[in-house]
Length: 114
Length: 112
Image (cartoon, rainbow over all chains, first blue to last red; front, side):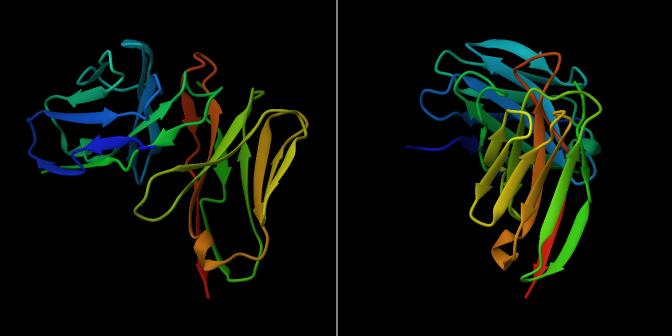
């Protein structure tokens, strides 16, 4: 079956712009988590959605937001981009949520902010 | 949520040597998962440990969960160049069961 699909794979933005990233989970997976990966900070949890509800949010400013649709697809948005937002943004899906279930990651969206 | 600490941060070995990475927590973990990320790739699930003192093997990889459930280790016997990558441990967030907190990872380099 198809894996987790993230689009776009690469994008370049300038400071102050906003960006929307998309994630399609594995069919049947209802939980979608987002992570930011940078060389210095590793994998940092952004938020998790289940049945269109955000169940948990990491320690990120309000410029980072997300949502989940009824088909479990998810989007995350970063507004007023800063240089420090340059990172690999990873989406992961699981059946009902991390902890009890393992995460299957997508290939990521690599964002460069100039 | 708690943050698991991983050591070492980097490890460079000759092919055929053994490798071990450690994951430590100051609090008791409900379970722990291990992931591997190849250079340029994304994290891929390796294993989940749940029980105190649990030991699981996958070919040359041996995973252990401490008796007190505060630490875990991944040991690779006779490393191969295909083992190159970053190994992460992750624990279930204590505030919410719906997030995994990842350690900073151990980057393994294997030279032939």
